[in-house]
Image (cartoon, helix red, strand yellow):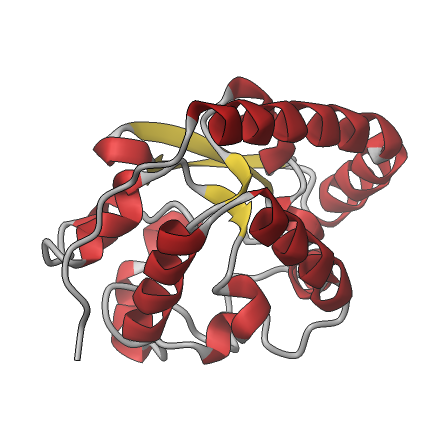
Length: 212
């Protein structure tokens, strides 16, 4: 049974501390990972010289505000055009699209997805304040169009790079379970909870069998 609708009542001190941690950690991360950024960019260009290194995609953030999320490109240049022919092969439940053997994913793309390296450019979204280090993943507009009012409660807070869903099974977790995990986070979030999720993310980040 689904719980009743929730309200967000976090204190200003929590929100300010959370934003401070986001800025410090993301800026440090961008500096320390700059070499990784350069190597990954080079590998992507070598495999597909005509394609762009970075991929940006419209997502839905807090209170339904749309923004562009940044990733390293892990798919062929014509991936979006080929999406329609693959929708019937969707292996995820609810308002999500996932298939394990996506033919659009490049060789380099498989590796950076497996290790979640493709997500690192989202540190830029964190610096800009569009995302937080911890929070519900920002959905696509077409996914939100299928949301019930209950599901839309995921959009009550700033979306995150990682969250309770990601450290609880990732792609093995269905849509309804993802929503419940996100709402659980929203109900109970605090600095300790955020740090716990960040630490768990470190352990599941590389070589996760559940990432696709």
